[in-house]
Image 1 (cartoon, helix red, strand yellow):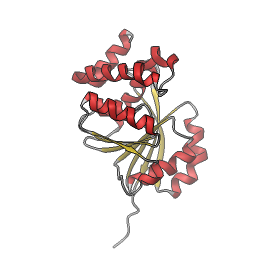
Image 2: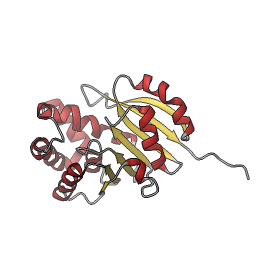
Image 3: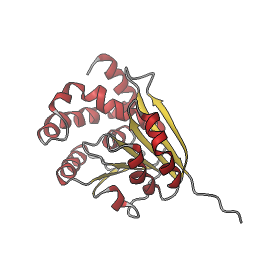
Image 4: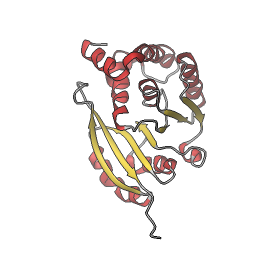
Length: 213
């Protein structure tokens, strides 16, 4: 971790920085051994992965129930659970080996605000109703909209970590997002004051249509 990354980590994780460090140890050891993270990523775990994900906590309202779709190595789900103990996290992951690893890490870190579910996002609809749905490196937005928006139960926000093509993805997905109840879609840059490379997020606001009395 560089000096700048440490400053950012202290700001984001506060007195839970020790938990974040233990999580990174898991990623660098068993996470790499079991194929959840590539060995080349080990030197970049803090900057490219953990801080890149954790910084989106600023976009999530206090006390929210967050569903993290395609949680994989816990990015961003576990980062958010560590940074924000006020949040309730449901990590949705279909692959058994990843689910086993996620549960081991949750147990080791004593994260009482996390539930790990082995299922596909589309099958979790009805079982999980979240205030916010997060995702990172899961799918193009035109497909991701259908995997995330239904988990909001008609109202809430999708916060998806995306790359430089976020604007193009929104254009391609606009029709699908509207059909699913998205009323406002925007690209938000998060962490400019903390990270060397800020995080790009696509934010979709979903609201129930108001029926007149």
